[in-house]
Image (cartoon, rainbow, N blue to C red; front, top):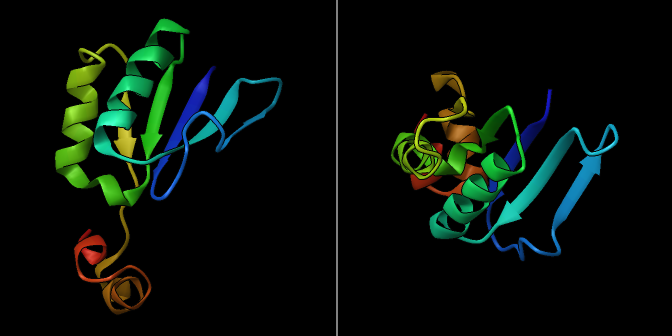
Length: 99
């Protein structure tokens, strides 16, 4: 199975990436939702089987990535338990703290 994990932040997606397990698993840092959608399309073209997104994408961003892939591969996004909201708020600020 080929798997990709996209993280959203201050990244250069052409430089900020890593491959493991002979390239079957990869992590790509993207700078925007638009960048993520472009990479998601490319990952589909390359035959990736699954895309996971960091929690910063939230449900709205995950839906946009799903649309970019034309719902051809499973796309998930990371969430956290409500009891950790204060920790996430401290680390990332209010917006990213929402599960």
